[in-house]
Image (cartoon, rainbow over all chains, first blue to last red; front, side):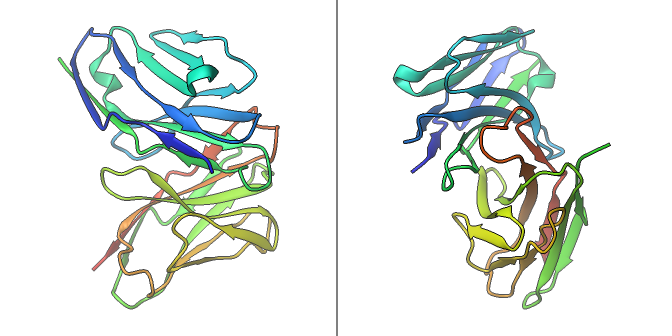
Length: 116
Length: 115
């Protein structure tokens, strides 16, 4: 069965602090995709990143970076020098490629509050 | 522009009534999905469909029904059997299998409230 765990329910930081959101996943598929989404108060989901299980390179996009470690089944997300606009709920998600796992399964989300 | 359209944005339902949420996509995606989100909670999969005229139950299908008569459309009916339907509903679509270059596309959601 597929499962995504985001153990941090809520994180509060002060602006300019770095913050890491944890994501641990479970799957029996050998090939899969991992995603991060941002959900601002409006409710829409904003796509942040997609990572194929074959690609363990870390990725950096501006203040955002992602650390994918297959050995620990983790796909952590770090925001450097956080800003108030980063306040949102962040979801980690997993999708397999076989018939029964080709669907997006979400973690419970981490609410990030960045205070000025 | 291609995308997913969900309607209505807000929906009010009286207890005991069935209501249908619309989801249409013009992305030529094979698969479509319905998720439910409760306040402060994650997104849970209700139903999904990988091909026309076929669909599978997700984790919380009880009290819901769907149809997939056309590739572009995947309406969700919240029946009177759903005891706690007040929630935010999101529809999504994707290509199947390894063609996930563009990931999943989400609609803007429907907020359903029972009055």
